[in-house]
Length: 468
Image 1 (cartoon, helix red, strand yellow):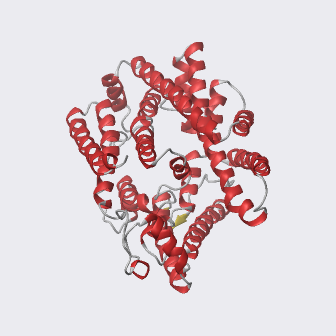
Image 2 (cartoon, one colour):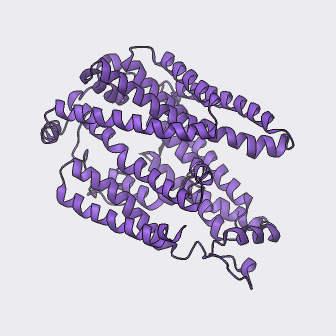
């Protein structure tokens, strides 16, 4: 929530010409009142309205911005003209970075965009804390009418989140590079974050500017209310209700939930005030949960995973991530510079550690730690394991539990790989198909849309058509 508040404050400080931290607290007050007055049902319903407003605003700005520079062809020509400057390099618009000439054992290779890309597609997707669809995704799925609605809603979320929402932002970001190769000195504190609102400020009249500010507020509110509701539900159901007050009334839990909402919002605001880099803050949050992903997957398919497996994986990730940030702090102070939260990267073995480098440290250490903890501790009670398996019937490695067991449901693991491939083809086919279409790579976009069509058919044929 801190980096979301920070991003919204950057927009408001440029658009409304106010101090950034005043903008932070205005955002906080608006979001807090909104979240307290609205429960989960209100959050879900208004998210839909806010998504429509936000998409309208971002698409409108993208169209206006592209027309302002003379169309997409002219935009690409002007971008090429900036090649070699600080604003544009040869890989700016490449979806897949080129393989570097450097040897794989050199620091040049591991600091290249290609190494980052390879680590993301080979490690990130299965290692991070949301890899099994947990968190607010499962909260939304659990509230759906039935399994079919839950699957449809989740597919739509991924399609809207990855394939639709990002491209208007990217278009305006590219236009901002052309219009503002260097961020004006008056906005230097915001850095490249100022590019998007500067385009808004330069191209829009009062009416459209108001609509765009509303669209940003809609996106901001949608994200914040989701996380406040989700975080408060965790605090109530997993901690307060379970360990402190298990037999209170629903009215009591709702009241305490509102208190937790206020506390979470205030903490997020102070975190936002300390941030200098949104991307660095996101990387820090991601790194803290980078080692737990494999546990979250295997807990469905391997009977030996227990609570200590999850606790150890998460604790290891958090400990290593904080240690690396402490190292960055120490190196910054030793160099005589002023330390700012998440602003500097630690240097290890001569390499400035970016998020993909941290993954290569955190993930192996977390796997070793949680495997050790798993085999040194007792498994969950057999009765609990049988109860879980009987309810879910996931398949996988459950031999001690499934001896003589008669399945009444198709195991989740049956056909799992093909459905996973189908989902990748569908979501990423549409995502990069739309991107290549926008940037006039027509032949490749047709191929990618074909992949998306195949994936969509497989998802329908193997999953959706079988659910009533």
